[in-house]
Length: 220
Image 1 (cartoon, rainbow, N blue to C red):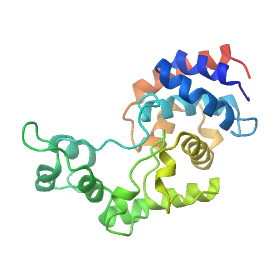
Image 2 (image 1 turned 90 degrees about the vertical axis):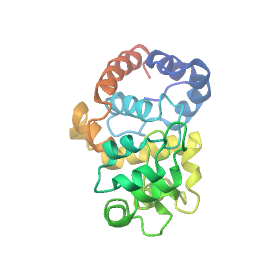
Image 3 (image 1 turned 180 degrees about the horizontal axis):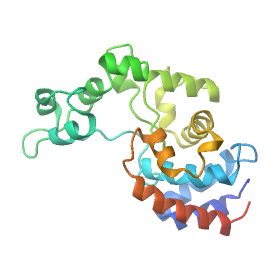
Image 4 (image 1 turned 135 degrees about the vertical axis):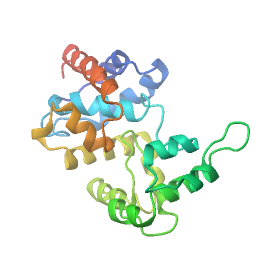
């Protein structure tokens, strides 16, 4: 399954990654994805690659974008996690106020929901452990668990997940930990595991076709 940087460059380009971005990442993929990185080799990669490309806006974004309007906040997170009044106070309103992304993260990833779902226990945890890496690892508990898997103190140094090599290493570890082999090929089920729902499913399905063809054309 190991591939050269040149092979990965062709794969990323075929999937639609911008040329300059693909050139920056190709060597990272070549170094981090080796024989044994995934339990099922290319069967894993064919599902893994489309999801991380979609979540990271084609490897352009390593940190979660919380630049929501009030309406977007309520549609995405629901009134149970952010009230209409809170959404109006912190959301982006054209010509009036910028989104207060720190406060948004603290609200939607905090409280009882954040403690139960993400292990966020400190007041600022929602912001400190916001989504990072191409697969958007989120929450203190996930940072701690993935950090243990890759041997890095992600709780103490969360910005490591914004650095390409640590980020890709963490994504692979998260995938192997959270996506069972029996789920491979089940795009909808995987999407729910990665994103919590089916947001972006059509885009991931289209990327999966491209990734499979590119992987096949660039054999390990």
